[in-house]
Amino acid sequence: MNCKIKTRVTIAALIALMWNSASPCPAKEPSLADGARVTFISLEGNKTTVRAEVADTPDRRRRGLMFRRRLASDRGMLFVFPHASRQKMWMKNTFVPLDLIFINEKLRIVGVVENARPHSTAVLEVPAPSRYVVEVNAFFCRRFGIREGDRVVIEGIQITP
Image (cartoon, rainbow, N blue to C red; front, side, top):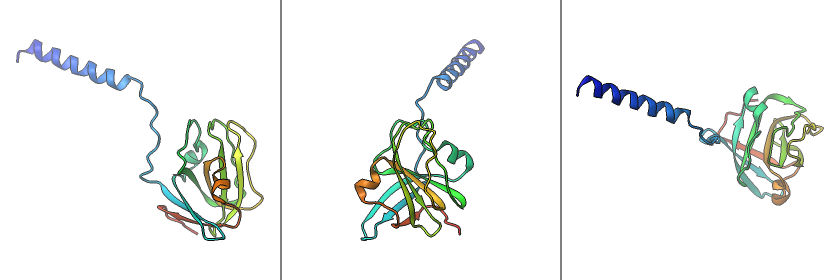
């Protein structure tokens, strides 16, 4: 191949590469490969499980489910905090109405906030310390009878005391 043809092929390849990397791509939702399974066990023994993305760093907890346009019915987000305290959440930049399930260090539900209003900056909390909060679609708790006092099993992450 002569030098002129080789140069044209290289330039064409570079233009194609730049074009593909500059073109807008739809936002990709995080993978659940590193997620958790959260099972809620009612006082009657009924079990309901969701696959949850894990928000275990300050940045992930801050972002939460913001900017999501939908959440599958069997999915959620598990917020893991360094220690139990009265966790305060909000719905700023969150498009999906949610139920928030507050869980203590003993893996018991200590409170539920149902049908949190999208985009609200109102503080959402319960009057008991929690170490974990699970966000799921609004009315999930009502549909599956999930309430304060129920047990929780979390799989797929390391639970530390």
